[in-house]
Structure formats: C-alpha cells, structure tokens
Length: 636
Image (tube, rainbow, N blue to C red; front, side, top):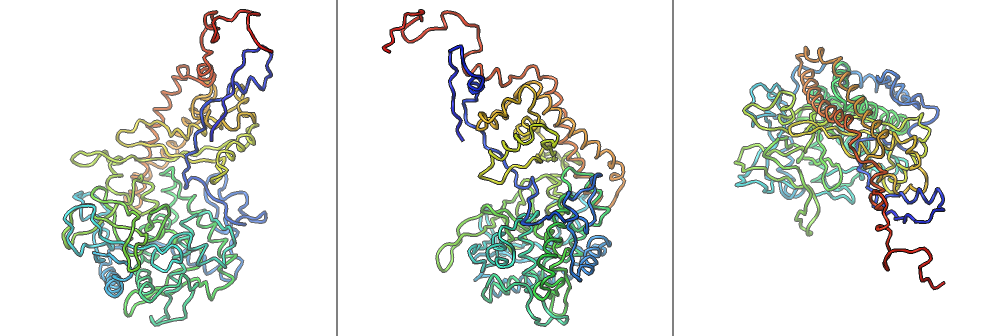
C-alpha cells in the first residue's frame, strides 16, 4: 500500500492538520507478517450469548475449565457415554509399551503391503518402497536416547537409489473431487460435509479440525460388525472412489495407531497430570490446543453428530487383521481429540495446504539426510496431475529405511505435533550433540495484547483491521516466537516490536493515531517512535520473559525428578525454551540501556525533509539564485 508524500510548506500560516500531515512518512507501509497458528479463529455461530463459555475457555488462574463448561456440553442423551470414552482415553494409564507390540505392527504392515500389491501401481503411480516395522532411531548412534526403543511402522526401500533427490513415491491430490487418497481441508467444506456444515464454518482447530472430520468419516466408512464382517457403512459416502482407492483407504485406516497407542505417543492424548506438567514446562500452551479441540467437538456433537447417530456413530469397529477387530471412538469428543492427534502427527504442508497423504505418511523423520515432501507433477494415463512427491535424502540400498524431514521446528512444536523430540532439537537442552556439531534454532512463545483499558484501544484495533482487511483481521491478542539455539543473538522478531509499539502508543505520540495517518501508521511502527514508547515496548518483552521463566522455575525441580519418558520430554522442551527466553531477555535488557542512542520518528522525519540542521541564508536559494524580498518576477 503506497503512502502519499505531503510537502512541508514554507508559509508561516499553516493549519495544525497540515503540520501533522507534513510529518507523514514518505515511504510505503510494511505488510503484516502473519503467523496462521497465532490466533484462535471464531467458528460459525460457535459461541452464543447463552453459552457457559462465552467469557472464554480459561479460568482466572489460567487453568482449563472442565469440558462441560468450555463448550456448553452436549444436550443429547448420548453425551454421558462420550464423556466415558474421553475419560478412558485420556485419564487412564496406557498399556505397558503399546509401541513395542511387534507382532501387531507386523500384521498392520502386511495389511498395508497387501493393499499396495493389489492397487498401488494404479493409485499411487510411483511407490518404490514397502511398509515395515522399524525402530525410531535405527540411524542414530546415541545409546542414551530413551526414545530409541519405540517400535512403529516406516517405509523400507524396495529399490536401490544411487544418490539423493530421487523419486521414491508419489501421490496425486485429486483436489477437485477427492477421488484419490489425499485429504485436504477444502474437501470437508466443499465435498464431504457440504450439505451438513453451515456455510462459513471455521472452527477453533482450523485446518487440523477439518482434516480430523474427514478422517472420522473415513473411519466410519470402514466400519465392520463385531465378527469383522461387512456392516452397514456409516458416515457420509463421500468422496466417491473406485474400488482400488477405496480398498487402499480402508487398509490405511486399519493401520493407524489406536487410541491406546496415541495415549502413549501424543500430548493431546496424555493423562491430565502429564499435560499439566507440559503446560508449565513450555510457553506453547497445550491447554490452548485442548480447549480448541474441546470447543469444536462440543459444538459439533451438540449441533451435528448427536442429531443423526446412524450416520455419525460414537464408536466404530475397525478390522486390524483377518480375525481381529478394534473398537475406536468416532463422532464424539473423544473421537475428535483422537483424530486431531492423528492429523497433527501425520499431516504435511504441501502446495500451500495441510494434507493427509496416506502411505507417504508412513515415512519417519530424520534430522539430516532427508527432504520434506514437496509438490510437483505426476505422470498419469491421462497426462500430468499435481501431487506430493517423496524423494530420497541420500543413497539407499534395498532394505534401508526411507526417511523424510518433518520440517524446521523447535522442540515444543515437534512434541505437540508428532509426540517426540528429535536429536537436533535435543542438542540445546542436553548441552550439545556428542562429538560436537551444531543445532537448530529453538523457539519459545510470548503473547501480547492491546489492553482493554487503553483509551486509544478502538483506534489501534482500527489500525490493525485496516492493515489486514484483505486477509484474516489481526486480533488484539498476538503470539510471537522468540528464538534461541546456536548462533542466536536473542533479537526479538521485528513484527513483535512493531505490534508492541502500536500497543504502547500514547501520550505525546497519540497524534499518530489521527485518521490522516491511517495509511502510514503501521509503517511508522516498524521503527522506534519515541523514547517513552520504545521503553514501554522493550519493557513489555522484559516482563513477559521474566514471567515465563518464573513459571518454568516453579516446576523445574519437579520435572527434573520425573524419570518417566513424558517427564523427560517436558524437561527437554523446558530447557530449550529457557535458552530462547534467556537470550531474548539479555538482548532486550541491553536495548533498554541504550534507548537514548536510538533514532526516533521525529528526527527521522526532519532528516527526510532536510530540516535537521541550522538555517543559513545560503541554504535558502531557488533555481534563479538567492531570494530577495519583492524581487520575484511573477506573471500574475
């Protein structure tokens, strides 16, 4: 957005407004850096005035409200059974080492491979791998890694690859009708639930929630009877698929981790005590995610699922072998949380969208010799189609595990998304990798808000709305990352300082909130405005870092004594985020001591107009020489 440059006239009689306009910044405004996961998004008619949670999902102490208070609860007669399933999934201790059941995992791998043998060449086009049981850290020489013993499914090379960047597998999207295997959020609103969800539905869980709803529908379509025989299909019979993709989708659903397995692996499915430990160990609050999930599931259960239990069953039976059937939660609060945990752990961001990519999602993570999934063209019988590509990260022999990168994330993001903390992220918390080596940047989160007591709050919200009218409106509460790790200076995110300068704008600087500056003010905030304003912005960062570190200190001793795997994961996250917070705190403290050395808005503007030096007669010249009073030869 361009801003107009307004000349500063030499006449003595000018209006106050014109004087203010002369100070307008001559350059264009900065666009707002957006973090899609920062803010909670209000769903269609999600909260009514009668909802018990209309005042928000948090109590004054910051603890989560009970489920019935958060989303209003279900009014259906089946709500009690849903709560029982939820309690059984999240509160009771999981079975001993469910990930170590190698016999079961081999059976699931065989189900996936049988489907690949029967239909893989037609549906996937390229898939030079097999599904097998692997140890999560076969390629890691760290004997002290307590996660090394986890057993799970992975991809095993079926051919040799002489170098990296060679195509191993490809999956077409079929984004228009979803007739393939790939699942994308738009298929929920435009295809599967098009006639069920209200127009404009946008849940707190965003794309992850929409993918979870698609996953629940696929589980319902795979429902079998108690003996494992064919049963009446449940769910919505969309997207329409041919026999090959339908069989492959059913096999993939069968191999997904059970709720008991996810209770051992994923924080969203942990017990309440472990979740509370993680809440206090990290600035990336799991309670926020849990409240989003509970709010959406309560709304959907009350307004949609409980109205048609034939189509939206609370539980389904999934065949996991020739003679074995497992019951899993489906269209219920427990089922939705289970599905969201699966989506967060298995989805990939490809071609501008989060996607579930069956069979490609068996690939495990590697920090080093690996690539992220990418989009590209896939050759088909009818030409070329868009799809996701899995490429080798190094030379592979037949039988080697094929791994990918889950992307550049910090320890908390890996734990909240995938349920583990990879070696690269653990370098910070464990004081560096054995034998040397660097590490990746880690991040903590800090949240700031335009105060409700601010007398200029409405003007500031108007500025935020004006700058983001063509995108999602920027909310008064914003969350930003602060980085740590090797090489990090602790310098705050420029977008965070920009927001804080606006939030603390007041006093003699409040004139910038006048409507005449509306097109330029956000650009002004990208640089220091005044010493008082900068002191307020820097002070807010200092206070937020101190508060976060203080909260971590309260639980650090308890977490350090927790020898359980979940406790150690929480400790890793807390130590790495502490590094980021301490680096940021040290940086902003130095900034606070040098406020008098910064150049502020008034000086910058005077310099841009050439008015930052003393006037001399030699400076006041025109194109024809020195001006002499009455000497101008104007033709009036």
